[in-house]
Length: 91
Image (cartoon, rainbow, N blue to C red; front, side, top):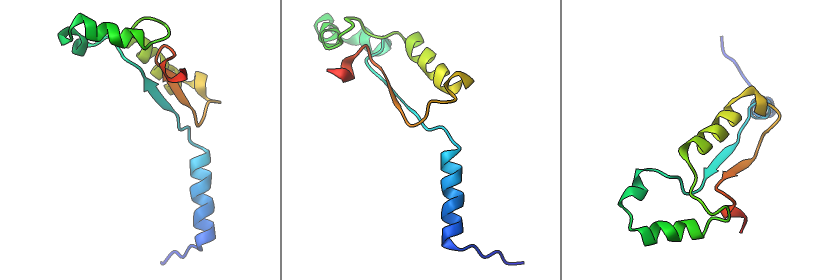
C-alpha cells in the first residue's frame, strides 16, 4: 500500500505539530562554577562589574528557571528566550 501526500497536507501536518509543541530558550549569564576558581580575582571582579545585579549567578538559579520551563507551570509560555543573567542582556 502506497501513501501519497500532497505537499499542502504535509505542510499542514508539520505546522500542527510545531504549534502543539513548546519551544523556549534558556540563556544563562555568568554562573559560579569551577571555571571561576582558576581566574585571578581581577578577572572575576570584571565579570561581576558587567552584571547589573552585582553578583554572579548560582547554579541553583539556572536550574530553577530550567525546571520552570520544563514544568506544567509554563504550559502557556512558548517562543521565548528567558535570560537568567542578572540583567546583563538588558543593558
